[in-house]
Length: 350
Picture (tube, rainbow, N blue to C red):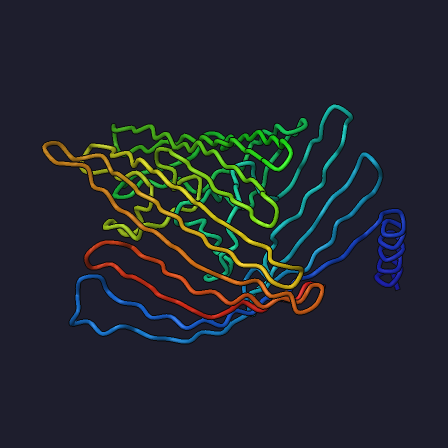
């Protein structure tokens, strides 16, 4: 009987809160259907691997925007890949007049979205020259177009290191956005430092990325893109060059007693044409290069990757889309792979 009373009381409290707040629920179901042909570069004796894959995208989602008052709001969003649920977003935000203060998990300031590449579960060229630091727990202040956040740091990475590698401070990210008519500009950056200790040896590692992005509209045509540069940037953002060091995608490496920093440069350019309310086309290209410091007497180790695509966005009805796309993901080095793909993403927002 006591358990029943507690349950009823909890339901009454939840119902009272729900009635006090304004809840706007939404969802998006996304299925990809793609054929891929993977060749190993400069090894013609190796047969291409051709495959078809169909699946529920992991960024399919349900969520709600919540407004409690003019000062207090929030949002939650959960995703499902067909096997497990994950928390994409959950945060509350307080408008204190001169700005806002956010507590929770959402996109960090160091995110720039210009591409709508759908292959790979909406990759958006982010791994191959885009700027994606993802969604992370954070404390964020925002004043107009400026935002700064203390972000939960990713696990400290130093390849080839033994001993203990640890974070001492949060990652700091900041961004400034400016819109001038049909032109929008965003400048963003992030910084993290961490340490490694092995016996009497101690190493301090710095990771940073600085990015500039812009978009401009000219009638039915829109251009967008970004460029960024950094050191050990794989600690902060998504970088993928499929490097000779395996996971050394923009990460530092220790060889002997030397910490070898990894410089990273990436860029994206995208052009979109909206022909009418039902049909638009988009073309995108991205490139990334990493340069790992040389060992004594050696030379720096560089690695490259690129991706490009063409797509059409077909709106069958409001909220109903099919997006056919053809493209390439090229890791650009002997022994690595080049993937040519074509297919479509199917999406219904509800």
